[in-house]
Image 1 (cartoon, one colour):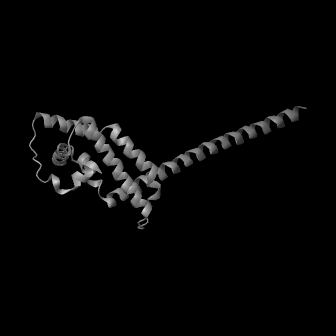
Image 2: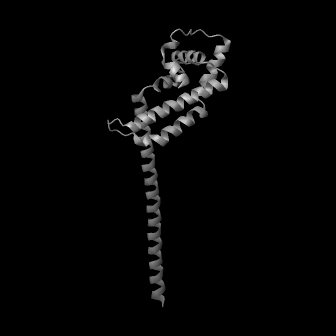
Length: 173
């Protein structure tokens, strides 16, 4: 699991949080990457494709645990790709994440990384997304029902007009 294993181990306790210009550049790079569509899309696709197996039931299933492990592997792969792409080390990335966790405006972005290793948070996010998708589907069905109802009403009005026109035409004969 590359970076995630390193990050969640105790190996990062001695990381110095002072930054020089290069580290500020690295911090900006990491922050931009964590807020980029490249990062977000892969995660959202995974969540959307897999959240259906998560519901409000308290039951913990093997399938859910497998999805959690797959999610962690996806995130680890994302981090490993970032490390390779930017030529960073685990220690450099860890240091920037720890700095980000202390940054008042960026804290929420970096807290997501901490949540990656917590099944309860993962499950709650999956349940929430499942409910959102169910609500979107219901709203779409209601929209389609309204359209069908309007079309039916339009047809009923048109049929009524045709009947009146037929009566008028037949009374002239």
